[in-house]
Every structure is written in C-alpha cells, then in structure tokens.
Image (cartoon, rainbow, N blue to C red; front, side, top):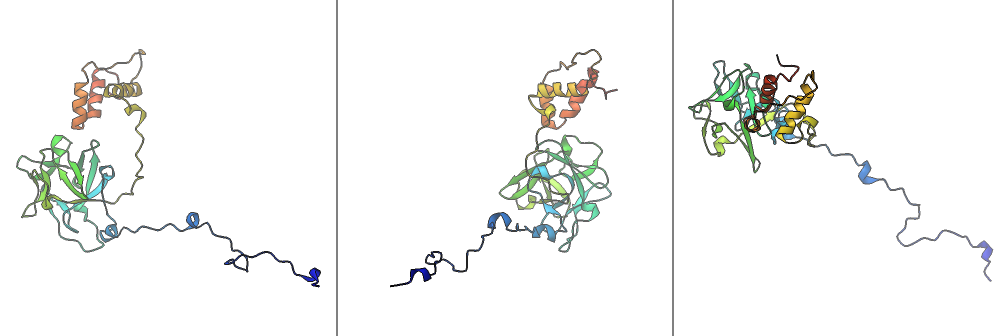
Amino acid sequence: MADYGNVKISKLSFKGESQKGKKRKHKSKKHEKEKVVVDKDSISHGNWWKVTKIEDMCGPVAIEFGDQTYVKALDNGLFTLGAPHNEFEGPSPEEILTAVAITERKVAFKSGYGKYLRVEKNGNITGRSDAIGPLEQWEPVFQDGKMAIQSNTESFLSVDDDDNVVAKSRTAGEAQFLQIRCQTVRQDTKRKEVPDEEQGTLEQVEINYVKKFQKFQDKKLKISQDGKQALEKAKTEGTFYETMLDRRSKMKADRYCK
C-alpha cells in the first residue's frame, strides 16, 4: 500500500501556466510613456508653426508664400516678397507682423513700422494706416487644408510677377494660397468661456457693459435709445466695443468717459 503520508502536497497547476510563479502585470496603458509629437515643419522654419485656425492668429506672425519666403515690409509703406531663407531659419525682423483680432472672423495686421496693412483701390497693399478701418480688416479662409486671406474688397492676397504684395484676384488659386506662421506659445484648444458681460442678445450685452462701467450716481441705468441697428452694424464691421463706448459717452454713463 502506498504511504499517503509521504505524498508531497503541491498546488494544482494548469497547462500553459508558468511554474515559477506569476509576475505582476504592469498597468500598461496608464504607465506607458506618452509619445512626444515632433513638429518637423515648425522646426524647419525656425520654430515658427503653421496656423490652422483664426483663434491662434494673434501676436507676432509671418505671412509665407511658397516655402521659406515671407512678406516683407519696406520703409516706404509697401510690401514685397523677401529673399528665401535657409532651412531652420525663421523670418527676418522686417518680415514679422503683429496680428490683431477684430471679430471672430477678421483680423488686422500691423507692420514693424507700427502701421496697419491696407488694401488700396488699385489692389496694392500698403502699410501706412494709423488706425483700423474697413480696408484694414482681413478674413482668413481655411478649406481643404489650404489657406488664403481675403480683403474687405473681396480680393485675395497674393504676390505679382514683380514680387509686390497685392490683392486683386476675387478667386483663390495656387497663387493666393499661403501660410500664416506664429511663434507664440500655443493656447489650449478648448473653447474659452464667454465672459458674463458678453452673454445674451446685443441689447443685453450693452446693458451688461453699462452695469459694469456706470457711475450709478442716481441709481438708474442709462441706456442709449438709438436702437439696436447701430449695434448690429458695428458688430459686422468690427467696431462693436467702440460703438458701445460712444453710446455710453453720449449718455454720460461711463466712469471712463470724459
């Protein structure tokens, strides 16, 4: 008879199971190193990255036609296409503009000479304006991975045969395709919350701003009675805040109005 007392009792093992003991599995997904995305295009342009939406179009920018060639401001107020840059070089100081947001769709550009870019009646682009008016406003157009910039005259920015910067064509083709490059730190892509005073209809927004800036000496709101048509027009033309300030000034309802 078998001596059952001498039988070695061991843990059951199943086919395919390691006899050396199970190793603790690492939490793979949570502890994996995040892959670093390298923007080779940005690096090749001196860390000036390609703008793909109007929200990122602010601060120092450069307008690029072709590859490594940028719009250059001249001291006579005109613009030309600068000389090609080598790889890993960014734009020169005279090729750097400042983008200023006007509305959700339009921007203005200021040259290094402190003047705003403007489209003239003959389609030439000049930089001699001290203030932003309708002709100093530009609308970036994004479609199918390509970009063009439309002027107030509905013509698109381009470079002619003499390398002069113009806006004469009402259609966008290869000659009008360009890139806007920026060097500022990229912002969070999440949509920013709308400030409390800018929520609601145009009339409500005006009331919100009156409440924010009014002196309240007589405890009564002083709202302009000119109607909302002027506000709607100002919103379209990019002069909404200036118009509201002017309306408050006429009502003497703003602590900052003279």
